[in-house]
Length: 164
View 1 (cartoon, rainbow, N blue to C red):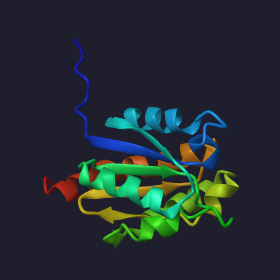
View 2: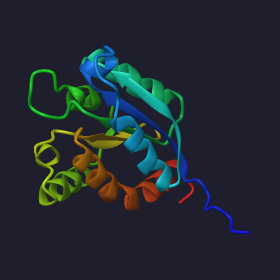
View 3: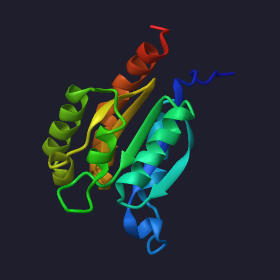
View 4: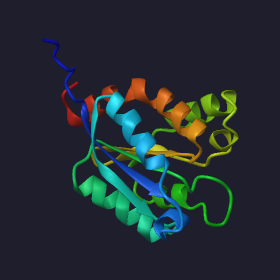
């Protein structure tokens, strides 16, 4: 009998999309992020959908941090349009930014042809003991961003938990 590898932490997905939050379109990106997080051995507490509103985004992030999740991945609202406010809302929640991870996600996304990843204003950082990551919303950007992030997650979570 083969034992499954131990879980490395808990995660929450926050989808920032006006149309999905208003029921005008079905969420197709939340399930993808959930699947990729589970493959990375994280337990996903759920997917929260919010509009591109700074207060709604900040509230979702603060709820996740207070709830004690180890990782929050936001998807959407990272571009340059007036409704792309995820990075701005996230900046107000972070205690310490980790710009190297954000730059790696942008660089690998652009190299893989995910233009929205390369143009993303997304941030990565720590709030309390929670790692917060903003990803661009295309499937290519999510797949590439998670491939870049996944090898680093267990190390960051162990450092934040003091178990390192």
